Length: 296
Image 1: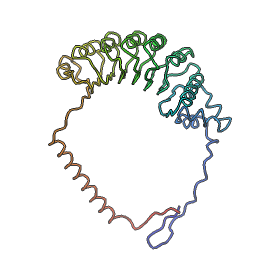
Image 2: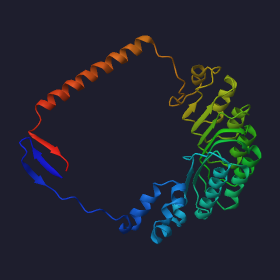
Image 3: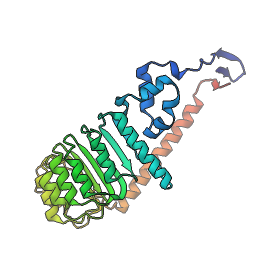
Image 4: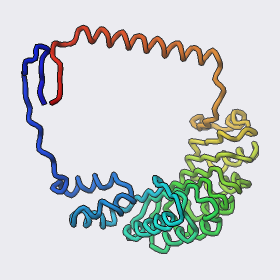
């Protein structure tokens, strides 16, 4: 790197540092680096770098979290391959699995495989866009074996209803966060939640088909609730319901229309801030030092 002033005179020179060999890093630092990779990246590439990386990738503690949501499945062949890799990741956890996210390829058989593999320490489970492959029956059997589960998301799983939520509430007494979104059989879920999930802190139901009585049931049955998201439920009078609730910290992020005056005010304020920032940068440029920094 050369530092050159405007007269072309070199005033300082620094040699480039030698390239760092990742294979010579300490184990704890290597674990941190590999931990930033996805399960697919570890299984298909990282573990083949060298024997040392292979040994680290085989450690069950590396598989406490398995994220299979950041993938694209284009055909049936990739579907089966990704599911196979997910089962392989579950095997490597040796029962230490605490957090797993599954998108597209989740099935009742896969849920059963998680339980049969001894992963009873699971604390977080995400099931996204599994459509018709996951049912009340599969979740019912799984809930009985997950007493430590704290966070659950079920989104676009069309065969899941309040029956599964009731079983989950009974089998997972520590459940604190539930996201139950865009599932076709979304009738009666509010009473299943109210009667069986008294420890909930975070609840998201999008969309919701219940009325004020269902909302009151949730607020009465979940006294520790801190966050409630019903932003696609138009028939619930939230403000009136919250008046019966002594907890003022309950959040209900229902979008409200922004007035024209508010929109214009925000636009004017943003324009003024941008103008001041531009003026500041121009003044700063005039008063800058005589040195330019160029890379060679």
